[in-house]
Image (cartoon, rainbow, N blue to C red; front, side, top):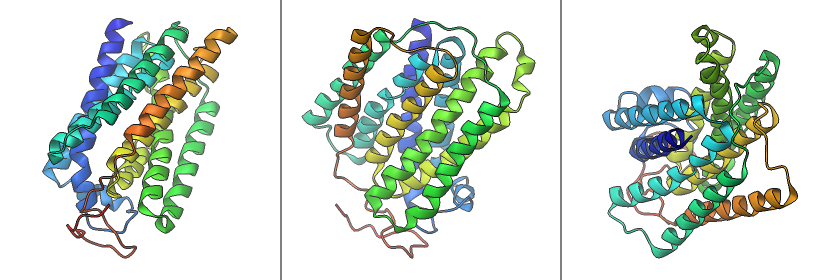
Length: 298
């Protein structure tokens, strides 16, 4: 279990590094404020974005390795630590200091995570999921994300960042739930990878990536990444507890404690997302079709 937790932390750091590298090219790419699939094709030609993507893929692979030998309810919350890494990396890349309030908020996230991890059951039985349940999960995540993508054009930049990231996080959490089943069963029989769960996981993962790049495109990186790292674990843990039989705290004191620690972690995450810096190159007008102005905005 300890090795899986360490691998998950390494994955969270690597994924945060990749996301921070991707942000600048995402805001500078041509297209409308909420870009379509071709937006990803443009980003594929940007060297820095590709390096960031390689780091993000490595982080995701580390996350999958951790998921293959530990419950979803343990591994998913660890991903929230990626916000701490993302905040620091963003500050380093832009030459800013990390403030005391961010340190306090980060400590709250860490305490909340440790508390939740200590109270959830640590059973790690091989999970199963029917194709029907997987189709419902995938359809719900894709449908909600598509609706947000269609309506995001009419939102202000901060609301657009949050909602796109929430939808992207839901898709990523669904991907993690499906991946938990795929990777855990592959330990016993590698041919289990050849199932309907695999293309469903890939579909939700790619769509989640499109939503997240559009969220970064708003220029509100900290807020978008915070929303992702709240939604992804919540959806993943819910899938693990409700569908995969990984369980939840059973006694009232444990349930109240888990709720309190969760609130602390979420509050710390929200506080970290309150940074008022917005990338000055982010698209500002509804008709944006190219690289945006470099005039700072707040």
